[in-house]
Image 1 (cartoon, rainbow, N blue to C red):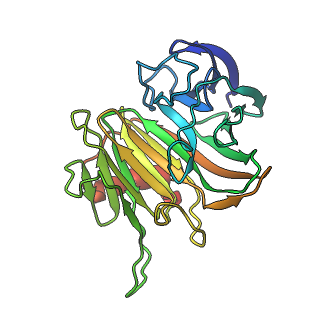
Image 2 (image 1 turned 60 degrees about the vertical axis):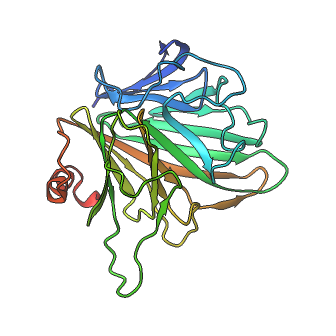
Image 3 (image 1 turned 90 degrees about the horizontal axis):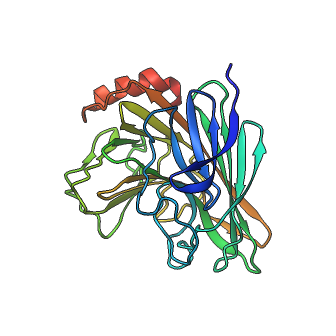
Length: 304
């Protein structure tokens, strides 16, 4: 069994970052800005997250920047509330298997964001606990919203519910105004929604579903990234009731999970957990759902 190491490094022109590694995979968490995970990948291999070279190393200022990586927001999306800049240093400390990173209280929203990032000692598995605290004087209705900006040129697979509800509908789907239903990058299948990232297509596309299965997968770099979370079928969610959303443009594809909506009272907190897995030597499949099934069943089995 390998050990999990935590060390302070420079990365992408930021002087202060934290590397969490077990000699299988590593994560890099920014300390000059955040909370944000800017890298996740096999040691010495490609970053499965998207990076934006034009903003690497930037800090300070009152304009929200698209840095890439994995970030923590709160839904429903609105300006300026959602777009509070994360351009400033975060506090961090070691916890067993990883770190806790804590943002200063946002001036405009009086929200404070935290992540607890824990890496398994002997495989690629990561658990991320996202925590939002209301430091204001009034209750705030929100959903904890965790967003992973994935590296370009991959293929995302999102499962559709298979629940038989007879004459009643069995799924909810949200479509954003800029999304084209005939988008050539999108396949709405019998079992899956498939999104193919194309760096030559600048048209944004976003879709949300009530993902009762609680997982989504992204094929890229001959690897497979899997994100898992818990969907609560008895809870209310934002954006017409969806717990999973995906956005893409020409630069990235975002995999987004949401917690149930809560009325967060002053000095209270809300949490949302994601679990990540990364598998190597997994070629990008075709859009054939049987082929996708064979790959996912072989790797995930009953956890699908």
